[in-house]
Amino acid sequence: MDARFTELVAPYLPVLGDRPLTPDSKLRDLGLDSMRSVDLLFEIEDVFDVTLPDEDLTGETFETAGSLWRAVSAVMPPKEPVA
Image (cartoon, rainbow, N blue to C red; front, top):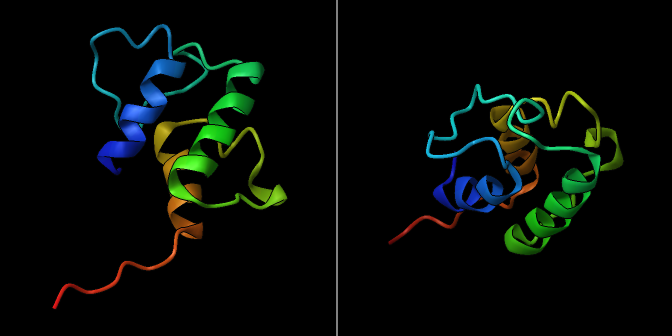
């Protein structure tokens, strides 16, 4: 997962505390509710300049930090190689 992603997601998880956010972290267990999910989605789309397709707006996508990251990274443009 991208460091920007984990820094962006952490404030939406009131139960996370000082624990690290891992790909297996269950977002609901860490306090992500439906209202926070919507706010988080808007912020992800703004920060990463992406739009998640409607078919990705599911409970499965928002189940873990890793599943959400996979959905985000799938719609990100490929990085330009550094010359």
